[in-house]
Image (tube, rainbow, N blue to C red; front, top):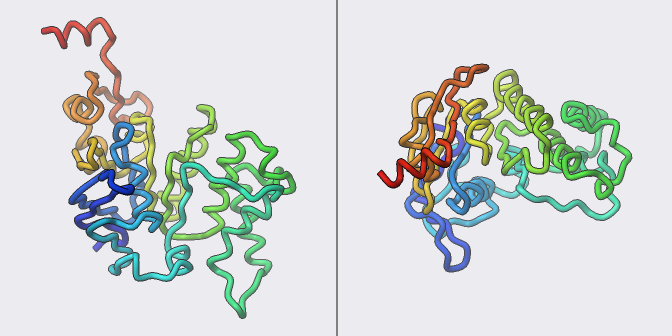
Length: 269
């Protein structure tokens, strides 16, 4: 049994159905990455896992129970979410925002402690925003704000982390810093991560488990990147012709799109 899974999900916004009969299991202790073209249901699935979207049919299971049956604080102590877009209250400082990650652990007889303070400082240090702790969040760059939100999720101290496009707004150096941090959280600390990424090469490099979605929320393949990623999968999911070669740094699959002239000639043939 996996701690997080979905059974027979139908996901929809109003009358627009995004996915039907979707079955997904997240391996415990994995760094799972969901890939697929735009509007295929990647973020929608993540929102269902986070209980931000109620399925039209089916259910999400967390620790063997329907996630709909948990109280909000119970969910927040078991999984953390970095959404695709986040809005901070006006004027709030970085330190105060990250401290909100400790809210699920506060109780009537257990208020703020030195241990909470240490957790918040550690989260800011690991994401490189400790020196910004007194700065208002709304004065930061997009990349800085993204790292602040990631620090908030880390301060929540959950075993399962859901990350919706965690590299959004980041330059390439900071993209890899964030992904390296995610890999460390998975490999060294045993967190289960579920991330939505647009860059398939980054997904192949970092994921221990890959879920490829086609439009309509159809699972095209799921498994280790080296076992499932080939030219046929790239064509069926993304609609492009590509070569799949070994990444010279990691040996993981690396997708090289066919040059425009060759792709045009192949489509004519």
